[in-house]
Image 1 (spheres, rainbow over the protein chains, first blue to last red):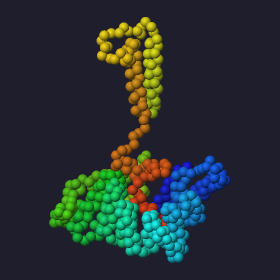
Image 2: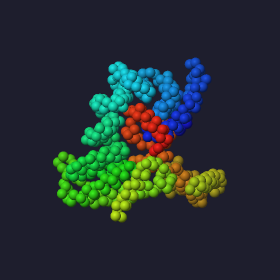
Image 3: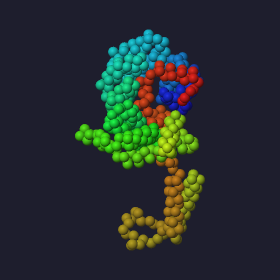
Image 4: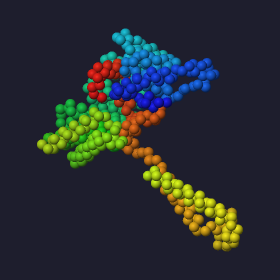
Length: 332
Length: 142
């Protein structure tokens, strides 16, 4: 089976979605041949069943919905319904997704919502449907209800890292930093090796620190964020996002320490389990390491070295800007 | 490196087959092959006691060819897969090739990226809106 069709079209890349949608008609045509419609005993001989096939159907469905090719999406959905039945969790969720995407007005959305509620009355343990319901509530702007739905999901299944991450994102979009940090910490309890979530938590803490007025609190949050970025680069070599955050937080920490001379050294309280803030030498050393690493990544990625083509262009240029800014400061 | 490895393997195989064939031919010689039972070998059980005394050059050739083959096989083996978490993760961040999906459930890059994309909670209406805007602006950004 063709490999390009198997690559999932992630939410961030529109060109991939376009490419997938463009391949859809030829793929669908290749699947509907005359011998596939033979009666039962003969159809066993011409079976094209495979995991790849249905994964491709789902990928095509999502990509064509995203690009607005609703007819193709409907074809894929019909094939999935014919294969897995109308009562399959995943198929119901995809059907709901189709209804949501093609809804013209409030009535269309209400139809999708009705589908979810009907399924959930029958069987409230279908988590894919409960997740879709929460997502629809959020998409419709009913943030409080969406948060409540997510909390209900998490009450029933507290180890669902995806739901915790969604809740964190919801809280973050509302500016509720403490709750977002709590949710992200829960994600890390379930998946302690997720290096991108460590970086994400570092980013949230950094945001929170930049919104805080009090110097002591700011230093504590920055140190915490600094630690999270350290963990993310420990888990993943050459992690551009982690090193970027490490450089940013260590620079801010050093600035903060040089302006508020010694007055706020003891911001952590060991009796509550807080760690002591990192020493200034450590921060300086790690800042130097982050600078060197960022420089190396930017140099090797932009020279097109073999095996260094995986970084996103936006991240690379942001790292270059950060490096330029810091060298400017030193020259001054 | 590949050429060196296959050369070593071929030469090693040639020497090994030559040594084995020589040993076989030598064992067929009635006069030279037979050795009288010596009392010094009584430590070895009778069924393990060799009835043939091979000349030293055949033994040396066998050992030499096996050493050559060992080196050749080790050199020609593919590069080891990373078993350290940070190395494995770093390779996926760095190179597009390491992120390719090779079959269902194999490959695909950072397995924790789903925590930020969250396919179960996808907001398809916003994605469609963003796509329409992106297309209207003819691919600004991304």
